[in-house]
Length: 263
Length: 138
Image 1 (cartoon, chains in turn red, purple):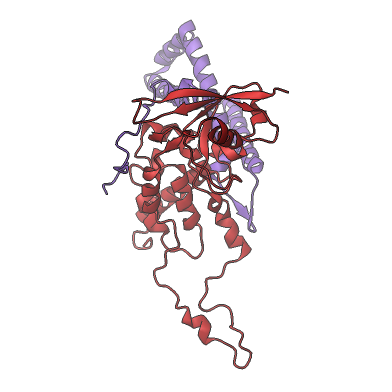
Image 2: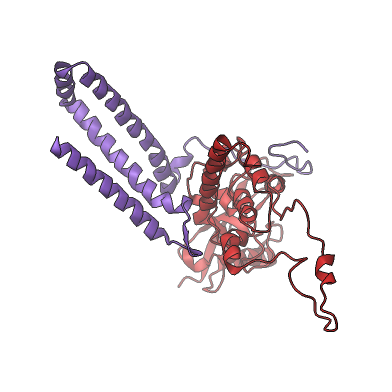
């Protein structure tokens, strides 16, 4: 077992240089270390100027996505032991503009995410008071139902997979379509749109379909399929988009045959 | 904020890499994808060939015989062979990806991917067998 391993890290200091460079660091090799541990070691012991994002270090927050040896990875879930011989190449997520070192600008993603309304939309909200009014006299126990939106396990199952998305954007860094056409809404945004489309409590599927059927939406996806391979949460955005295309096509046929019945 | 990619104004010196024209050669997985896309050319080739065949049949037995003779040309044989391999690749990748788009639920449980793939392959076999049967009968 090697005692140390080399990390080749992208550096970009906009006040000093006009293009990114690389810097190599030697860190202790430990079997239980992930790439993020190695970066933290560099920051603490070797070079405090190295800049990167991280938070939970347990694959939940989605902040520490980077390119490790050319593949989009959560650095908190990528062990040094996968790359024993080294050197390990650590770069910022591709296709995103680099702000500094390993930190990229994600404004574009957040801007697109908002456009597909990733929340439950109701035409008419059930008043909460409905639930309160049905308190059983004398018992103090509220009767469930009226003011709530209840769901069966089967209804939950329909969208649960897509709801696992942590917005880490690894799928964007794996998607060549996003690289070539930066206007593309992209895998995570479309999968999250599907997450709400499939939710029995939501009523905005048609609205989302209209937004996602525009030139920068589902039809720009050429089904490379790499987003689903990169996803650390098995969301399967590629599947979501193909199902979205199918739903869009069916909706189009429906509106052709029954123009009065689709709204 | 305008529509399309918008970036915060606080980072006037962010660095954006340009995607190389050769991006699909950077990884074998991307190359396989581009190959899959290119198979559509072979599909188009067979479609055009079928149109020419129909025209030859319409023009009478002599024209059809000439058409068949032209296909014996080694260049055409090679082209057909390569196109056939491409179409085969097209079909196989298509069937393998089918479960991504088709989510069928039976009594609330999602039908596993392999079952959908098997169904597609089975349908392919049945249709092919029927085509062979029709051709051999005639």
